[in-house]
Image (tube, rainbow, N blue to C red; front, side, top):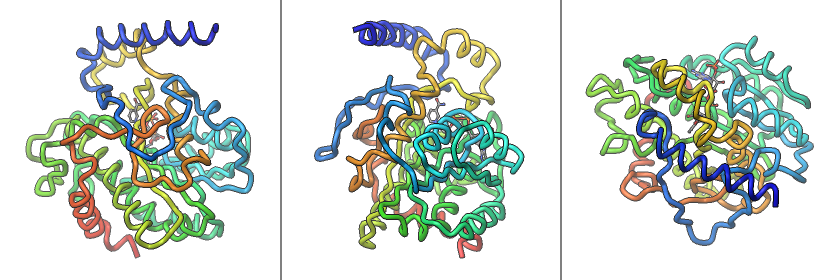
Length: 344
Ligand SMILES: NC(=O)c1ccc[n+]([C@@H]2O[C@H](COP(=O)([O-])OP(=O)(O)OC[C@H]3O[C@@H](n4cnc5c(N)ncnc54)[C@H](OP(=O)(O)O)[C@@H]3O)[C@@H](O)[C@H]2O)c1
């Protein structure tokens, strides 16, 4: 009863706070997908208030190995903390070994720090070689690291940086570890996308503007990279199914959470988020819930190629390319070309 009235109050504050401030914080991720459910996919009793601890309660992850990228901050750190607490061996990546060690050392349970800088693909190669030498299957590979809304265009390898860090780095990582995921009894890839997919350009992915030099807008570039996350997961799911593998791939939107992701926002937006964000944003504990749920829920063992919000499957906004299989296949082909020499 007490929890229900707390939740009602929180929902009221969320609605009022969001209505008042979302137009101002226009570069934050915003709700708007609606809640159409894909048929035939199990629904959970969890929602946007559920925490990662709650959605994994009773799940024993002893003997399982998880890889979490961006485990040094925000949602990745909470994901690592909770999955390690549930008994998993968590390989937590950081942009430097020092950062990864500090993050791993801050949580209880079995963790292994690994250096992974997604915009330097030789580090993706060395990280995956190291992980391969550990020799165990990967039960859950959670592509969580990300950047948002870089104010000015930056290129790495001649490609726009959101696309490189959020999509291509993870594309390379997953492909290099795919055999280990397939070797698990039921391996799962979870790709952290975002409702920001809605901000992608009308074409979805601008293959003729991958350096982002034409019409650069921070949110558009973030949106394109987050659409790419979801399309990568969709095509991976198709390929795994075709190969007869029991491994699955799904994408998630974690919610709106005040983390370091907003580091590139204007100062006033960061101050506003700190002051009133609590009225409509999720806590970090709740923000990590959807990834943890999709990675661990026994009910989702055969579920692949779907998109989740608030610990449940959602049909993404129509017309925004999230279910565009042809675009997903084209993105896969282009990504393979771009990271080609590092894939082998
Ligand atoms: N927070 C939200 O409201 C929200 C909403 C929708 C989706 N998401 C998604 O959730 C994921 C986690 O974000 P968060 O909110 O937890 O943000 P965060 O606190 O900024 O954490 C991001 C993590 O990614 C790492 N990272 C950044 N650039 C990297 C690179 N080049 N190579 C390797 N790692 C890199 C960061 O390391 P450093 O700290 O060392 O840079 C950090 O560990 C992101 O994919 C984001 O797009 C978040």
